[in-house]
Length: 513
View 1 (cartoon, one colour):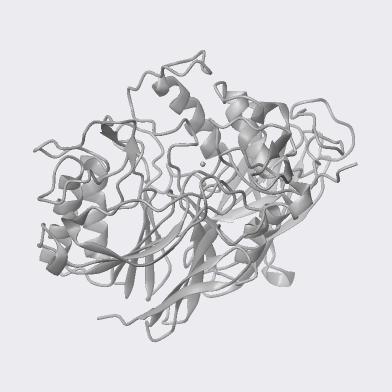
View 2 (cartoon, helix red, strand yellow; view 1 turned 180 degrees about the horizontal axis):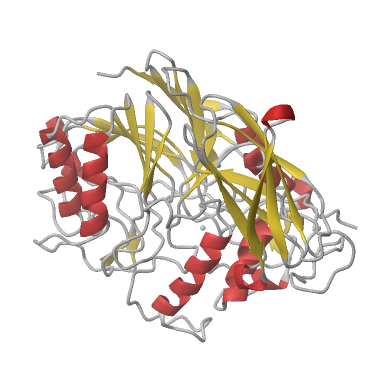
């Protein structure tokens, strides 16, 4: 018997508490009538923690109201949050305000039913950002449970999350592909060396996600993993999305020709995927924070202020993305879109933080094909002047140089290997920008690939890269990666790329200017 303890991937040893069973196939019963006290079957999370604010998240096993206890003793106060109902997949969040900066916080969460029955308590812990020049660190990666590699109890679950937690970071940037809605899982996969990879299964992961319930099930599956839940209870998440939360390489308006899908309209699928994603991320009430787009939707792009030394800009390179073409148009073609691009330039100009980290869900200079003639990413393989989507990047870089925005670092995942790219106008066809670094790290628990070709338009060079064989499983851990950044109190930034065994593969100190 297996004891059940996240582009589809690695490991397991998870507790299938939400299903109430043990075994290699866990039944999905999220909305049954339950007796006893409300429980927290999918753990607890915090997210977007800044100097004075943050959001906490939990999911109940039945309709109930979320409560949070902040502080202890005489400073203790209880916040009554919203109801978790089937309309929210039994999830709920509470925004925390007026927190003390630079302080450890232990927030107790529980649900109460309408008749006052108080449920199980769990604690979510985090440290608010300092207002002074104090040191802090973060990790980032992407790509959870893709390419057929799900939660495998034989290898200890998704051990990459344990490795990231062991670095004791102040927060984690999930750079997208938080689920693989388009990648069905089988109970067994034969690896090239003959070993058998065993996936824990629930019904929602055995086919491509199309319904809202199936998208929700993909998120619930990942939270079965002990490593993920343990880390999320102790490390705030800055979540992004990319393509696999909906379907591979999607863009607005696309019509699928994949026979696995009965619903072929990507806009319909993306709306369902977006709702499920917001339900399962600790993003809080963005309306009250003024983070709605002009069309009234909660936006994924946002700034998280981490004090004097660090601001993080989480961008959304999927929602506003153009059709995947040959990407050689002579006019500007969107990947950020006009509204987001204006916001990004404006907020980067306003930032007084020593370092401005741009968390992107797509790399800038890597050539990522979509079929034989189209391109999924920003680069097009043409070494000359900017074309297609490259126009937006050129405009952004030019504006940042013109306004003297310094100390930029881009972090991303997506391509399933790790690399350190240095961009320099001295090597570029487009030269109106200041040099910067882009660091790539992933997958955390999915198939390994790489490397991809670099487009020379913006003058990148691969200072370091490491990759595995095609669709290599996470079993060994030496081809699955995360990045780590430490910002010292004097502003020195130390970046490293690591595999999920914890080994440091590359390290570089970056001095602020």
